[in-house]
Image (tube, rainbow, N blue to C red; front, side, top):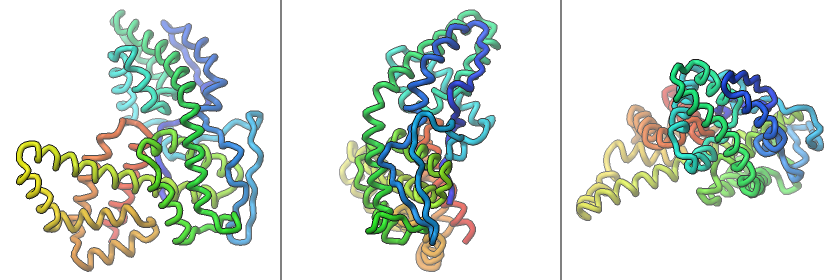
Length: 357
């Protein structure tokens, strides 16, 4: 199964900041290392399920403390490598937008992409651009941005502690739904356990399925990997897949409602005609079938796709529907956010499976 994607994430102490005009930033970042190692590292709480059995193998999660060995790299695929040229372009775009933003606009912008903005690579890129800038005004603006970001990140981390606690409790419910009646986890998960997890995720409010939710899963996945619990890693991957299908489906419904509302603002009859038209034809069959795929276990995709293509769904129409969803839903998410990367990878994998039939 695919893992989700994201930007590289390391402890802030690994930043080798060499800001020529920004030497004071290095000192201030040192003050952030302690709180960020806990909050942005998203250490698993004490109530992370303690037992997992994969076949006849039984393993236990070790007790976690801040004195443990440093965290390995995130299990999210994109966090295990250097950013690509496209990702650096995204970082540059974010730096430009943030440098032109008003100070009071920074908290919201930072909280939406905290993993990217707080990463060493982001600050190093600011330093590189500051060193390369020939305009004194541009140098000053980048220096001010770095200074403001340090203060803003510290404030955002403080404000999100309560939110992270809530998301951790919600992730715990999702993970517990994967356990058998005796509290143990059997991997691979049965269909009943996957559906139980799906019920928990679909029962969460939209505001709960945010970056903190994904970051918590990432942290738990990383801890399970460190403890050699590959079965628990698979459960976390399943949780991510269910998350992606759920939020993409909700976004598609919301988008359709917005389109209908926009048309109805001009003419109710036109809106009704739009809704009726959406219920007919190839695009409707492909759209309905895509909705079905978003709400089933990814292990069942091949079988269901084959059945659909053999009945009333055209392969080309289905691929087109997925691509249209990527354009309308994924591209509307915050650039570089975990949500965008997880959902984009989910749909890319779906397209791959469809084209392989």
